[in-house]
Length: 309
Image 1 (cartoon, rainbow, N blue to C red):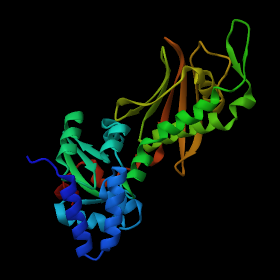
Image 2 (image 1 turned 120 degrees about the horizontal axis):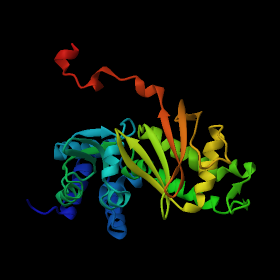
Image 3 (image 1 turned 180 degrees about the horizontal axis):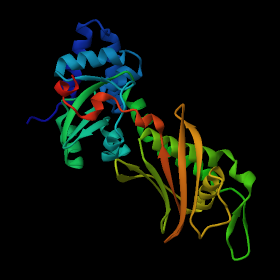
């Protein structure tokens, strides 16, 4: 298989856009200069600078390469696919994993003929990689939407470290109730719930480890790391969840059970909470009860078209 020549592909893409009267020669030249100066891909620069609409670019690329087009704004990205590729790799190669089916991973990319990237992702995930052309939103925006919740959670919890903790007899930490209503704690937990509902998780596990507070989401029976937080926020996070579930915040050694409801992604979701003492401190498991998940569409049952008829 021949190596992918980015300069040639950029030239051919530019010529196709000019020939189709989608862009002028001068605008193309300006975009090429920006791409060369910033080390970005031409397709990326064209959309960023507003020179070509993403739908137009997608149609041209689809005709050029014979690859399908997907509307990222309307597509439900599979969290299992996101979990296979790190944010760093997605940004480095400017791709977005959108679905995984058995041994095949489908990625959205504006350069489907970049076989070096395709082979790199295939080697990393040990999956056969198929490519599609994204429209509806830029790849950068799509990557932000699917990868940055953990970064936002990290940003919020960095502010929690400044909360005023008191010490009771024996050295146990006690948080004032007013502190639990502070925005960083509330927003961090809201983001955790949002991420779990978005990823269609059945459970959220909040578990203190030796060196961090690990948050994991159970998706299709498998636990996936969601975010790792500093151990210093353990008490604040667990106590806030206890308050939400109407549990005894002073009790840390005996198991407790409770529940609460929250509006997540414009829908009401119920959460059942269980706390128990673990090897490195108190842990919590939140069962996600999203009633909308019970409404399964007929095509999602896995039946053949003939059987459905």
